[in-house]
Length: 428
Image (cartoon, rainbow, N blue to C red; front, side, top):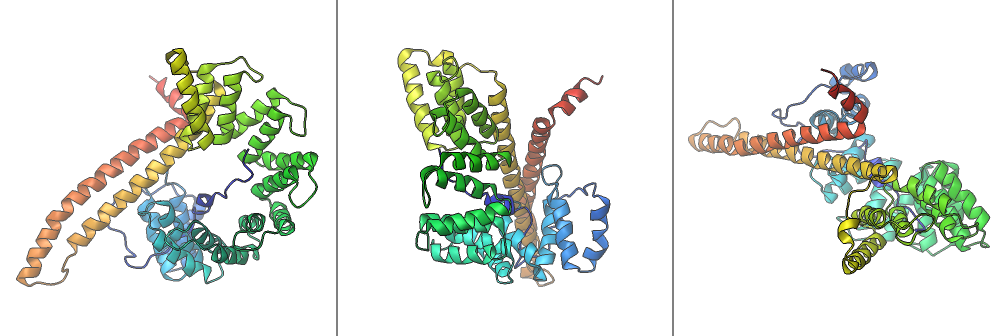
């Protein structure tokens, strides 16, 4: 059982960035105009005449379709135009894209710069992201005091995830003196604003008796609220309570049900617990193949317990001579759902990385093609010719990346909409 789900910072990268040098993306990148809705189409005129807010919103329109059609270049172009005018949400978006390698090469230093531009304008989401940079020590010296300061600035603007972070810093004594009363107060504030991580944390503090009298009923109540909001860690925590009879009657069926829900969202702890239940027959018949499959999924999430159990269980199966049988493919709805989630997340990451590389390759080509632009002397002409020739390989690599991205998008569409593709396949 984990006491805290780390805030999903990547969830906030969806809208916010900044550009310093080149505001114009190379024209060589082929872009498809997406079927923009009426609202997005109405932004075009305003964006074209320099409305920063419209430019940012139009960038969002393109960005939101990035797993369906090639719109990274269009999104970046509009975000950069908006950011160049000092529009904080666009600056934050560019920072997020640099941090998460979304259409741009991962660069924590650039990310921090963009976040700071927006944070200094009082933009809460950028303050939150900048705090996370200091907390993780990405491109800067890890500084919990700085992180706390920025989290607090964002929390004072009622950003729920920042409120939860402030609570966590008080809980763990990061950058501030440990204070469970303050932690509980901030978690309650975040929970009141709909933050399920804070609800999960309140459940854990009640279960452990930190800053209050131990209360399993209250713990289960908070976990249940978070679980109803789709919080996978809370679902895993409830499963753990029923698996071990912690404050409740032991109930393996309920435990497995909650573990299944958490595993469907990629929770490695839940996947590890399911492996354990199948290995030792907790509420089910022992099943080596099911146990091995769940441990493998957990280990693939970099879950340390899943990795250790996979290693130990595999060694036991090899010693017993049953590894080959246990390695046979299993057909189970819960495993299929967990694997589907993992495949979708993996494809999202791969598409983002390939698109970022394609744009980077085209950018290099553009730089070479514009060497000594405007100069007519002999030496400049020679360098320009060399640059044009040298740019070819970057165009070729960019096209390969675009083709790969198209293939990955097709795979993603087939996973996300299997019925549509199965239906299409039956049409003569």
